[in-house]
Length: 215
Image 1: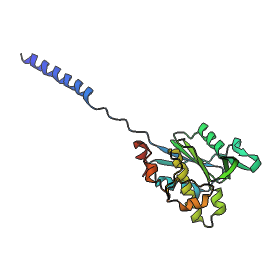
Image 2: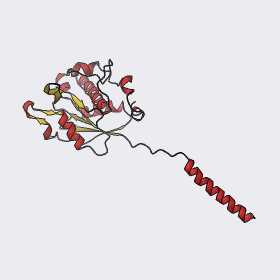
Image 3: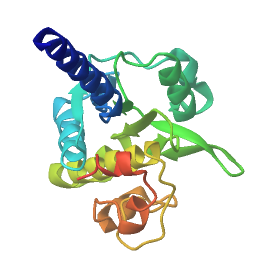
Image 4: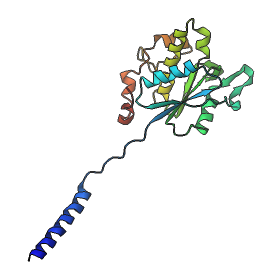
């Protein structure tokens, strides 16, 4: 009788363990670490790269790294105006992404351009594909029109946050002070009027997962 009871209790214990394992809630796998790669294109001053990293790090809960410099892709060279096509650079980055990067922020000191409306080759400070993996910022305009280094770096940092915002899915925003405001061809005054931060309206469009990444 005692032997049967021990066996019965043993079977009951095993049964409970098995049932409990099926009923226990599944433990969610931790999300992979989000990595933003800053990619210098051509010769770029270290202080420019550091500024971009600092501005992005102050707003995002992600790991930000600075990758080795790459040469600007020759297919992006626009000989008629002696400058580089930003859209072609982004296409090239999409085809040749840094390993392990969630998002890419390319930084250059070269002059860049893109097609805007009926203007085939419009000079710009930066470009980002909405919801895409990469964006591009150039220090060229700010180097040319900033009277102090402090102003240059502040404007460059604001631009980096703006273009990165496009990769998060943000379009241009009409809210006063929002970093996602459309420069409308006035890169200097737009950067100076920016708060440097995403407005509540923009943040409200993010998924819960992406919203948790923004400080």
